[in-house]
Length: 205
Length: 205
DNA sequence: GTCTATATTGGGATAGAC
DNA sequence: GTCTATCCCAATATAGAC
Image (cartoon, rainbow over all chains, first blue to last red; front, top):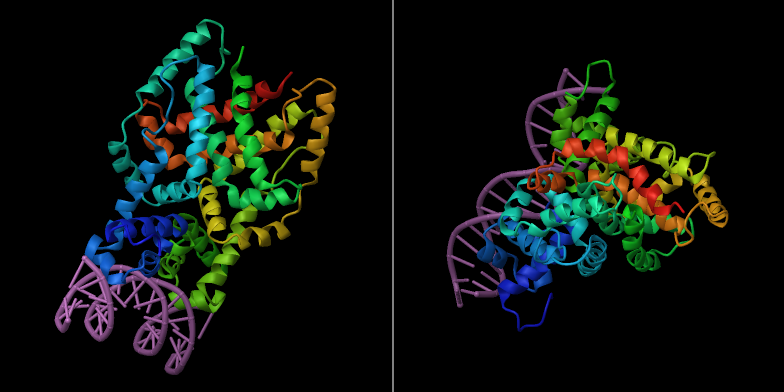
């Protein structure tokens, strides 16, 4: 049972399906398991969503919007680039913390079916702050605040890499870390506290 | 047909299965498709490998060993940390370039079945250079060459993040990049050329 | 709307001829 | 070793009673 009786059936299905799809992926998920998890009969799934494909598409969009928050890439509107970088990691790491299973699921499904991300991008507002950040970065470059040899687009992708990879690589990191006596959970906490500085060190003039 | 007639059947199956599994994952792969791709009959697959599970395990190990090269994390034996960092990215990026589909496949399968990575780690030599790097890093810290507030374990994981993510995120990056007029392939080349410097800037005293 | 029963098909696996 | 034919189960999907 995914939840108390208060939720209506459609909502219970959505929550159950989100769990199962995120864990197993589209190809690995089973309608039976979703039904069990929602505490209902298998045929009710078809009554509400017609087919596995349609159910999946629905769930994919819901889960993705939850995980991304308002925008693909949240950046503050005000502040220096350094402040924006710090704030970005705070928000991004919070989202990841709350959606631990999402990154692997998302990358894998989009890889299997790139059409998904196109549909998704239509529904998520394009980030105006993204372009602002790039413009601002070039200005602060001229002002001598940041290194001249840093490209803001690459910087942004580096930031995302540093933020997400510890979650994407969890199953691998966990195992490899024992060979050097490091605890994965402790690592995550310390990582979160140190990445902003890592990036700022790299670009500061 | 995966290859010319010169290869024996077992080899042709292995190449075909590697392609299909890497593309579709274990759950999404179909024995029929592997057979077609190898230019043989479906039942021959079972003759050679008994079951889909066994075939997959075999392929997983082969593909992983190819992609990792000799070791989980190749680091030079000699040189300063800065030199080792540069060399790491060269080798790592070469491997990734040759195994573009591997990262997503690997992370996803290990996530579905963590047992896989334990079996794999047994077969790959544990990296002695890893511990050497960490020790050396602490020495160069005392010598004032690198910043005191950098933890070498976190540094190594940051390096891997920066190296791999552009490949893991390919399907997403491709789509998002068009919204800011950036070409993914060009990005990859420039990224490769700039990451070592990005990291070195960040830790240099 | 929700259930039980059943249809249908896809796909992994085996039997047996050659 | 390689094929054709077939088995069989799992999983999606539908019919129909209530």
